[in-house]
Image (cartoon, rainbow, N blue to C red; front, side):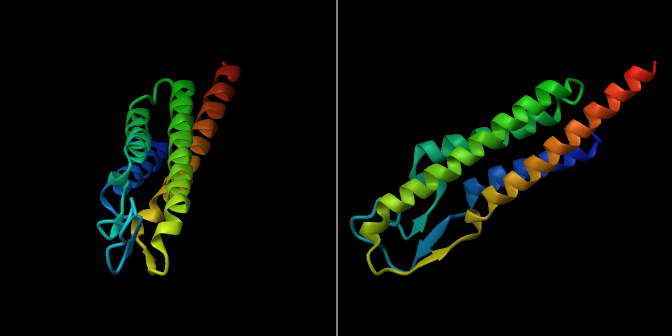
Length: 146
């Protein structure tokens, strides 16, 4: 059923995944010459196509997983793939920032709200997977009683 708690968690995870697309990871006060990420003062998802694809796939898979409530095993697999895509996106974002750290120099970098959304995605996706697993265990125990 779509009204289950895992659907709410998956919707919140998708909102976190798509929210990353709109909100910046970090920003600087002035433009940084020679920096690939902070040339426009803002480090966002649009700075790298890999980040854009990974976080968009994670959000889209979470949305798709909501409608797979009748096949809980597939719902869990797609939820895990979305979680892996999000974690890969986080790792890629950190690698890109570390590679660009030498170009930033002494500029002060302020974190944006977008940096916290992938962590929220992990929390909500984990809670959804846990709820799906509980739901599957409940259905299996009810099937054993028949």
